[in-house]
Length: 346
Image (cartoon, rainbow, N blue to C red; front, side, top):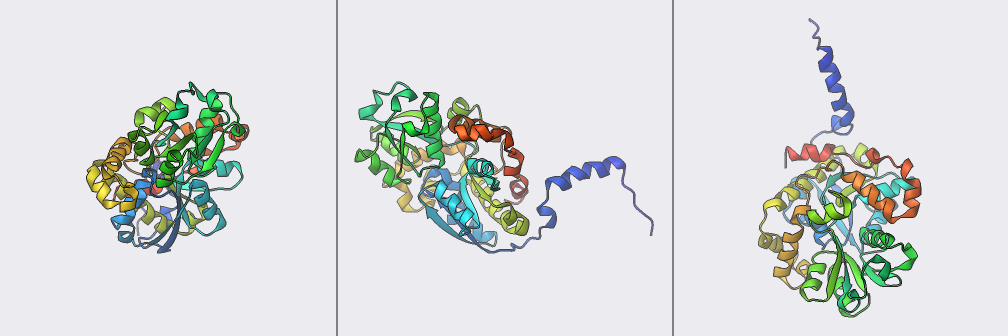
């Protein structure tokens, strides 16, 4: 049999592709693990809408998965489930991958749901007039989804811009959805750092004034300088190594949801999610979705520069993280491999 020789350029060109695809190189089509437990914190929020759409429209089942979703109060709690071994995968904020690496624990994101933070800080009307800038919120109580979650970090970032320390503001975990609205209505907090649709409901009722807003592309540009990686699926690296087909199935389902949401009518989205997610007002829910749609990832991949924007955000919000920033390896916290492959089949 005659030997086949490839031009040297062709061989060298193939090497980066092999290096960039360490998981799919071993993958078969059938998921290795069909029963998957996923943890999420505040699933009813629009922040996690692609997850709910993938679930409700059967995209996970189409990919061969039997997905169990456990909903916690906030992102920090769902992260704990992953690290404690009670969940295989977490739907949470990308920033957790960086913060866990700071602590010497590796987790890796592999499909993006949000390319904008989609969180805003609002103050009750009664106190808003007294606040000219972040320095004025010293001593105030804010409702966040859970201490340590992205809602909390945005609050700390804003406070830091006013020269305040983390201990100068009080963060109270109030979950997401109806409990956020109740916390403001009952005067339990001075303000909230939260996601939609709760924020839009409070705005529509005239109960809060928004001070920081990352629910639009413009808002993310103003606050972070561009795209900001928000909700994603992340897991421990060993899960990707042992279950590349399962991870691919998860990514494919989320990318299908991302793509569907780019053109879906707000009314169709409202009809797809559980009725309880509407918080009693479908029109406000539709308005909320229309407002954040541009912050939903169109294809599940990490935009160029977005990880760096997240790093800058954490450095500004957390002095301890800033002290350790040089030991963080951004490249180890994300792979686009699964989302890129999913784009071809979604």
